[in-house]
Length: 585
Image (cartoon, rainbow, N blue to C red; front, side, top):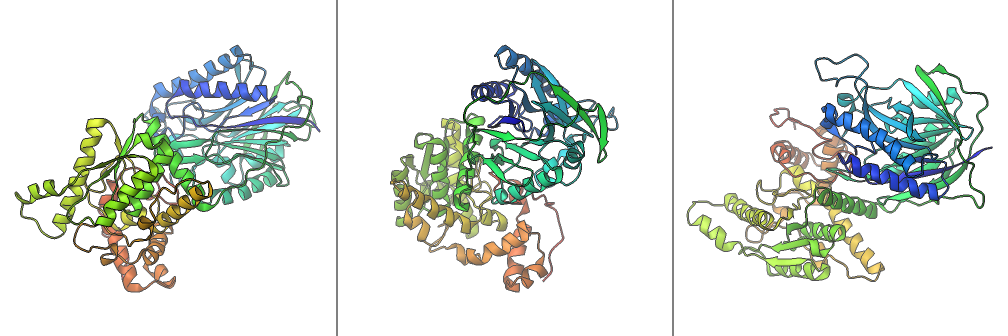
């Protein structure tokens, strides 16, 4: 059987940076060429970055993507790499946008893959299955393709597919079986969710069985606004054996030799399989697999849940800061668990010299909280400052008659003013530190502790915050480093410290009780009856659901933050603010 040396390029493109993304393709293609690859694969929408959202509707952007693709093909040939076939994702269009008045049936913007060879675009494929759930709105943007492109490379028939084509049965993979291909290439922009790697491998195996062919799955890495992509690229045989698997959350070139059945007959022109036209192309002059030992990509096992989430949050924060060109970040360092975890994430993502932690004590701030904040700063080496807020609060109170919750919120808003002033003065991005449990029940102050440009733990339940802190400290100890998070911050009862002796439990159920209800209601869309049937106390359920429903207006104004769950606030969960529906108790 022929052998193909595949190179799966797991890289980190940036949305809108066509020149930079093209340079990334050129440099990684050079590495693949030097490794003797015969086919190199890049992720979905590689040239434009992904997702481009409403940039799809700008005809200038579509034209720039098409031009960048042609230029990239020429540049690869100019680099002496023209003989190496390269599959790259890009934005195409064969008609006006579907939202325009001159839209044409069956034509419009396309989520596309191109095969580049000898300075030209020799084959194209348009994504067939378009996801329209969760974070995806591809029916809004793209028109579905109805052709399966099969390219004969080194005597092996290879089908091109894109991301969602793998997640749905039928269509391209069924057509690939009928076309008798030996390898299905699947290029991806598949966002991270906790434990998604456990779903992905069985899915790749099912599609390999459906196609009767090996599958080469390549996924991007990196952060894009709320989304983070973890890679986890792999090669799986037709019978489900995993030949090679790339690490998560890092750029990586996976090079692996795979034996594949030779094409049995000369390629047909066009045929129809499972309702799709099958278009055949042949590439001539593909060099043989280099002599010597076979290239093996290795098998990287996925990491534990806490490590996986931590790496996702670090990568999401790092790319949000760097791709938006912020020099540094600033956050309020209270001595509590949430701000400690965010500070540790920021230091891991950016280094201590780019992180400013500000203690903002009031008359209600306990001595241990001040000490814990200072201890955190010493452990991590971040830039630590102290800005007492009480004189400013007193100035407001001398001119306003406030009491109770209004005074508590005033303290939070003074802290927000100080952090934003430092941001304006010194150029920092303000990080907010509210976890998903607090966002769910509205346990935050608008324009106070919710102020900020990015929230690294927006999609992290409070109980997971504690698990992450414990894991990060244990990981540091295992490596002989100083654990970054003070044990006092992990062990003490959570409190906003906005009034004497205040604890979160004064207002909310214990988080061990609260989080399972929230997970069922928010992530699982369970109603009241379903939650009660699951064993939760009806009175507690009623209280929690009331808090969640009435806090929608706050969540709508919250900062973006890295998505790690199946249903993050924002892109995934979209509910009306003005809404009289309630789960009745």
